[in-house]
Length: 377
Ligand code: CA
Image (cartoon, rainbow, N blue to C red):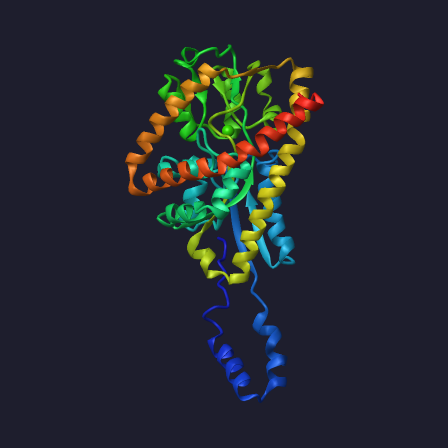
């Protein structure tokens, strides 16, 4: 059983009173300074971090493991996080309940896996026609997104922080060309979250499977198609052995934000500095993980195409327009769920317009012009 350590808060009122009295009277300055060290020394914190990722899985698993280690490194070992990959302590999709119940203190995962608990969770990983990495960070950190996320998780006794991102995901692996929405009808495809529901609107059968189970289902034919992440991760999954058409871009996950969820009563029992340390480590994990995806995806894509015979295909406008129509139907339903879902959707749409109009004038045309002028494809 993991021992939950409490903060010094509540333990040291008499000591704090003493400092206050000493400062006020101007006496005992020497005594106060000699007591200062034990007053600021913090207790050892032990936490179990469960995860939705297989152990050592590139980017996702290794990113989570790196975060757990970073927490220890940042505190000179005072904060000890024992990391459990999927199935080592609980199954991947039981991670949320494990932390909400207080059995473990933290999880690393993608919050859209909890969309059946509340559809608003879909907005806090990636949602169809939603934000890219830089856009969702703008929304969460500076556009009111974290406040809505906090409101959502508060009902479950957890709190989530950004702790990684995969960037724009690929559209997925298919055994046939997708020329129109008709080609998606009856397709059994692994696609979680609200994106999966969009596929359902177009007549497909979305299936949610944790990463560790996708390959066997694709090889056996239990599913016809799958999305996962992008070239670096998908290459490691060896999907190219079972499907040859690799479509882009994925409308369903334009910048999948990974989350570190904490048990809220455990988290708030920590000192403010430990809370800040954990939040800062999560923000670091976000940046360093995204950087790793961007550094490795291009080379992995070249290997898939040049060495493994993968056929790269772009979804055409007709298919994309059908996705957009399906997405609107899904969002119409999500808003009916609850006041919080409706408010989250409204905030999402407003931020997408404001932030997206800037991306449209900055990143998008610049990259397009740079690559055109220099012949980078
Ligand atoms: Ca995905």
